[in-house]
Image (cartoon, rainbow, N blue to C red; front, side, top):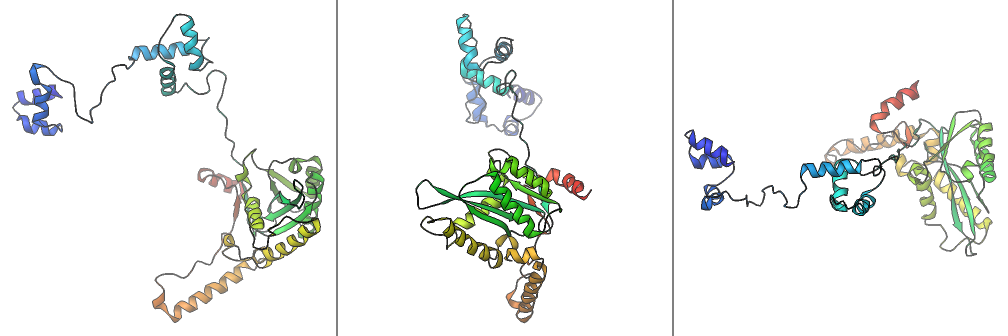
Length: 344
C-alpha cells in the first residue's frame, strides 16, 4: 500500500485523496513511517501472520511424511510419537491434524472409506390399499416387566387402521396372521400392495415373508436404526398412547387391552378428524367420499362470504387434499425421475 501511495504522489496525485482511495487516513500513514522505519499494520482489521506459523515448505513436509507408506494409514496421534522415537520433530500433533484437515486427508486415511448414505425407499400412494405401514408397540400390564404387544397396520393414504391385534408375544407368526386377516378384510389379495415396516425381527421373519409372497404383498423396510423412515406408524402410536381415554394405569390383561383398542379403532377411523386429511375422518378418505365432503365445506364458506363479503379479506379456506401421499418422499432433484418411473 505504501508503494502504491508513493507512486500515486510521484505521478502528481494529492496524498490525502490517495489515502482515502485505499481506506487510510494521513495520520495512519504517518504512524507507519515514524522514525524513518516502516512499522507493522496496527489496525484491528489488519491481516497478521502469526510468528509461530509454519512456512509453506514445512507444511508440505508434514503432508509428504503423513503420506509415506508407513504412515498413510495412521492418524497424527500415531505419527507424531513414531517420528519422535526416530529423533524427528516436524510439528505438533495439533498442527498435523490441522494441516491434514485443510488438505482433505484427515478422515478415512488408508483403506478406510467414507460410509455411503443410502436413501430410504420411496413409495407413493394415490388411493387406498396401495401402501400400508405397520409396527409393534409395547403396552404395559399390571405385572411389572410384563408387556402385551399391539400390532397395528395403517393405510398411509387414508390413515385408516386396517388391521390390529393385541397379543402376549411378538413374533413373525403372529404378524403373518394379523396381516393376512387385514388383507382378506380389505380384499387386497392379488392387488398391488406395499407393506412398510422397520427392521425388527418379527418384520423379517421367514413365516411373515412367505405369507407376504403368497398374498402378493411387496415388503419394504426402513434403514437400520432410522425410525424416521416409518413416520406414519410412529405418529399413530403417539396418538394411541396420548389419547384422553388411554388408561392411566397399566392394563390388567389382554382382554382389557383389546376392548380399549376396539373402541379406539372405532373412534379413530369413524370420528377422528385427522389434521393431515384436512380434518376428514380416515373412513371418509378410505371410502372415497372425501371430495364430496370437502366440496360441501367449500360451498358453505362461499355462501358465508357472499352474505358478508366485508368480513373476508381474501379467498375462503383451502378445502382440498393432495392427490398422492408419499412415504419417504425423494429429494426434489430425484422427484422427476421417480415420477417418470412410476408413470412408466
